[in-house]
Length: 441
Ligand SMILES: [Zn+2]
Image (cartoon, rainbow, N blue to C red; front, side, top):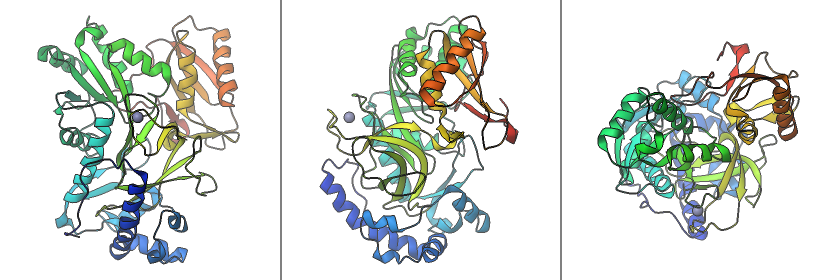
């Protein structure tokens, strides 16, 4: 694989050019995967498919999907990286783990070429989201074994920005640092952390708008597309707030441009993306307004590659041209798969609840948690604990419950608690608690 040549860090503006790249790279990548992966060889043999017959994106539908649990089990059977390791350890230069609020971590290996690719895509996303050389980034992600801290840091450097690797925790010291530096700065964190940081500032007599935060780029959890949530961050800090989307297993995949017309998928040349019906598994045509789950296939990765990997993230596609000129797929998040639960046959995402609650501000603060007390099937009313800025009353609880029922088609048991009583996230906000698994707020 040494002779493998990588494309320069450009976005492909012309869709036909992207098709050419895919038709050249896809068969080559699948042949490489077949030659190096006991996991995929077994999966494809069991499905009775000869992978050499797969030449186009449409052909991909003949291959089975890949689920995270299967990859994780493969690592248990063949540590350290399982049947998708792809390269010997002397070629692998970094291992990181996938996070998420549920589940056991999965290990991902990267060769030098894989890391170059990861940096390339992250840099495109950062530029798309408005980050430019000259911006001073305070990165407040978790610098640890998990993807997101170090990987995104490298993306900022690759995009030519100046990054200060702050990490998570000790918010007061961070505020002292930005005061001492006395220059406009860019915050890279989860969106919930932006609000948490403002809260800490005010507790110490500092007005967030005086702290010169110019830009916010946010990732790691949904929510920024809930209009009131973004507005609150921008009003609090006097900054812009842009959304970036990615998965631990894939890295950064999409970002909003300044026009905020949804998330631009910026992985051209590195991934094939399919949209599927999450229940039937059938491919959904990529048309305006289509909804479905994103499925990803690597086009050039050497280690820990993915073929038809199910994201379990539900999106809606937008086809109208964006004024920025980007032509790739563009989408809005409907919900992150890890957080979905089903109440009497209705799919519920915490993001939907957040949207309803932000519409009820200022009666409620917008902070909430959902607690599932008993295992599925959920044929009971899940508890939705909501912070209220007003005096808690049964009338207000009923009003909140009614708003959720009307918009999301399920009946919650709403409990009101005083403002500031729910924990604020330093890292990812956890909105959903499966108490029946011992997961308690
Ligand atoms: Zn755009």
